[in-house]
Image (cartoon, rainbow, N blue to C red; front, top):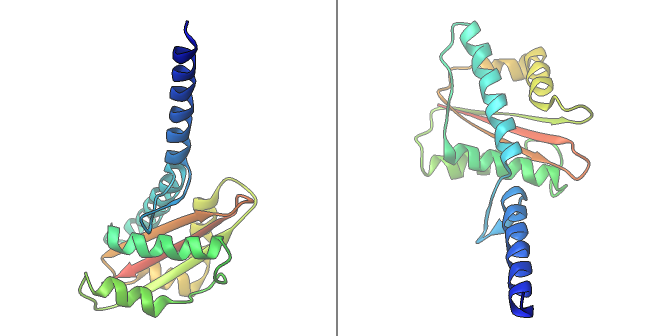
Length: 165
């Protein structure tokens, strides 16, 4: 094998690794952040658990909306990277941004921080249901939702769920 072919094959392996790492890492590209598949899976799991609970209470399931999800993800990422505290900072701004695309009648937000075990979605959902204020949001007269999950470098997860009507 020629030296050229050897380097060409090595370059191909390096490019494949970079592509795979780029797919599984959260990064900024053109101002828009991408999300790792594991985080999307957690978001979907929280959504399913919330809807399972709502259905058990004879409430309609919430429909996930990308515009709302984008704002929830951005808030969770800001908390996970310690740019903001774990709180509802900027909720009014998130509502304002979403309302530019979706009509607004009412909005609410649940946030959470979970560390320790691998049961982030279940743990957060159960804690929300134990809290009157969080449960009221979950049981509220909302139709749309967006859920954003972010992980910090220690594996703790930060979750934001925005409710929309």
